[in-house]
Length: 375
Image (cartoon, rainbow, N blue to C red; front, side):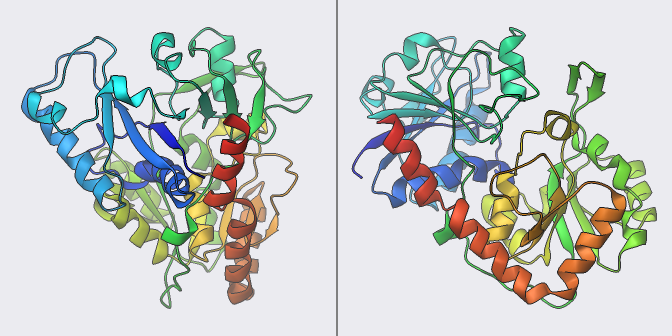
């Protein structure tokens, strides 16, 4: 498929990248594998930023993307503020970018005047349930797009536990660029791992009241898990220097690493996942309360690498298994049972993990389906 796609991402101010970068890289690499020309679009901060810092952020982004053959970058600013001259000289002109066949936005803040400049535009919801709630409450007001996609399997279903915000959402599963995520056997004794922020000052409210919506709150009911399984469990967390929290986790049997050390860049993050035995992770409480059948793009990277994933159940799915390559648990006892089941049948579960990624999350298939509907 020959098309130029402008991918609107959110990585400029993540100077190292890590797992956050793969949210967007998997889509960009999927587009490129189908023969598309990819333009990487980023937002420049509206407030003043030191020109030297701005250039450093841009150069870091440019170096990261170059590793993956992505070298066409454009910037826009909500205030009209121009980045430094040395940055502008390396960017595509925004007027030329709007000539792309499709704008694919993975963040929600582009203004209507810019979105309407594209012939075709698609908003991709990567926060299913949350985005619809934010829109319904007037906290976010996205520009009109020609198409709306969501990675939440239940968003468009009747009886969903949240409003659809009055928009017609089309389901598109998250994806993983399989050519870039080959199967990598783990060394003997490797732990089950995950990579995550720990604290985020995010609260949600529903009919049950207000609740914290960070990973720490999601893990709280499962903190005693290491005492219920023989499997080694390791968390690579952004703890913001909180050594008290780290010691409390280690006292319960968790191995704890600093995410900024083991998963700083996209390639470090990839190496960390590929060296793991599998994934163990809980989810933010909103995913359980909303029953959005969410699965993390991070989990897909484990599956593609041939790593079984044991993750918290986020609601009924038409195709996600509960105990085949991907295991979805509901409580502490269930989580321990899933880990023990994987360990007892490990080699087969590794094959099932990769097969699941190939069948449902292959970026070529997922991106191809989006393009067929959007173009």
